[in-house]
Image 1 (cartoon, rainbow, N blue to C red):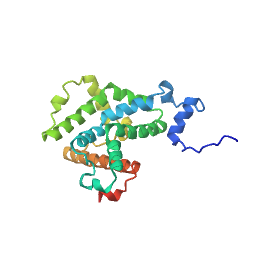
Image 2: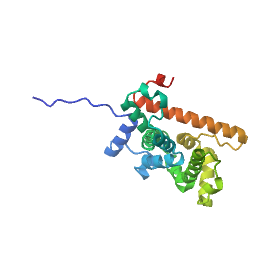
Image 3: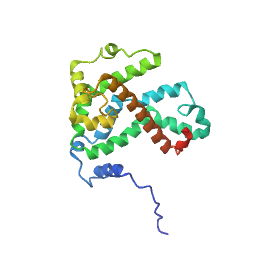
Length: 222
C-alpha cells in the first residue's frame, strides 16, 4: 500500500516566510540579512520596553481566579488556565513575537535601527519607568522618578528621548504599544489621561486575544 499523506495545518504567512528563508527558497529582507534572529531580538526589546505580562504575573500570584474573578465559574478550569498563561509574561512575549514578525516584514529597512535605539538604552529606561509605576501602584504610592533613573546613563536617556519623540520611530512606538501618548506638544493633564486610556486599551486587547486563543466567548465578561 502507498504511504498515506496526512493533511497538516497550513503555516501562517509570516511563519511560512521565515521557514522559506531558512530553506534558502526566498531571499532574506535587508534587516534579516544582518541577523537571522532579528525577530527574536526585537521581541525581547519590545517586551522589555513595555512588560505588560509582568502586571499579569503579579495579579495571578494574588488571585487564582484572575482575570475573570467572580466570573471564573463561567469557563472550564482548562480555559481559565489557558487564559492566565496567555496573559502571563511568557504568553505576552509569544503574542508580541507574532506582532514583531509581521512588523519586520512590513518594515524591513527599519528593524536594525529600531533594535539599535532600544538596545542603546530606550528599552532599559522605558522598563524602569514602567516597573517603577507598577511598584508604586502596588504600594499605593507615587512613582519616584529619581529612584527609577538612578542607574540610567546620559547615553541611555539620549536613546530613550529619540525613541519617545523622533517621528521616525512612530511605527516602533505603535509596535511596542505606547503610540504617541507622550507627545510633548500636548498638555500634561491630557497626556496623563491618554496614558490611562492607552493602558486600558492594551489590557483589553490582550484579554480578548487571550480569550480568542482559549476559545472563551466575550460574553463571559458581561
